[in-house]
Length: 140
Length: 288
Image 1 (cartoon, each protein chain N blue to C red):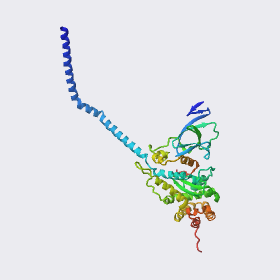
Image 2 (cartoon, chains in turn yellow, purple; image 1 turned 135 degrees about the horizontal axis):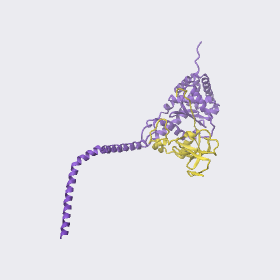
Image 3 (cartoon, rainbow over the protein chains, first blue to last red; image 1 turned 180 degrees about the vertical axis):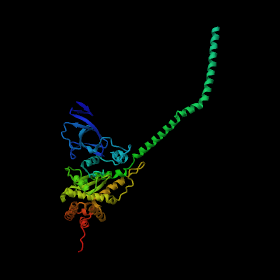
Image 4 (tube, chains in turn brown, red; image 1 turned 90 degrees about the vertical axis):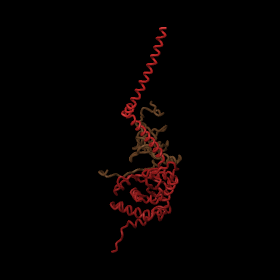
């Protein structure tokens, strides 16, 4: 038995990477389904350990099994980044992921968002369906 | 006696030696003072000192700039996504977008429609509302379009995915023609500016949110804007006769709904008017 982050890991589980939450607010879900219960709310920049577990038989495409603080649950990979999202201290390029609250810290803190608003903001990203029309081959 | 004389001699000699040494040292310092200065210069110690001071100064400026950057308002390319999401969060209870629903697969049909009319590489997000308060709309979101579509509206009209996509395309056209931003009529001067030493301009923000609601649920768009939107749709759909005829059928369907269903009588205030849109699209009859 190996102990990582206060959790006792069984031999058929291992940490396979680290990712950072990159939207304003979000949720760690009980199941890999956007409608599933939220185990905990997270905010931009939250570090999460990506876990590979034999207990999770079939993880749907685009979902990760992660450990955040004392919770383990599921999150869509598109809401995460392999690097810490940038803030006002960094130079931000057009394709760079950044934390809105880190980019505009005073403005964002002055909004004084309550818990319910933070919860809904996290749910918003779960409720979106994304799409993008393709660029014809040769025009990319 | 001999011993005392010897001690005396040694003491005197030592005093005389130390006086000579002091004189020599003084003379040495005086002579080489210029040389030492030259040496310091040649070792670039002075240059190093100046560089260090310059760096320190630059660091101080950087710290000041960083402190100032903490008080930035969102830049223009980050403002609309924030504003639209903030409005959606603040109005979550009325719009009822936080509900369990399956993935309707509208995005795939929408992608195909966009590609068929030559709108390539367009990013969008769809949010389904479980409320009839807004039938359908597009709101700005930086480098993408945020579509809102009402589930009760889709069900009442029994809309197919191609029909929903046509409605969303119409919303996208309206948004890209700038009609939404024009109708907001809000002060956006604060965007991209800095408020260090001042209070955050939350009143402007509140006003923008209020205007979002007013435009999308009460005021809507005028006839001129609707005409421009419909004509642009006509141009886009000309290359796809099937999509064009579906659009015409859709407008007729909406026209019937707004005339028969009291729940949607407000629709023509927002999007005037499906009946006229059909007329604008219909080919003019030639007099024989």
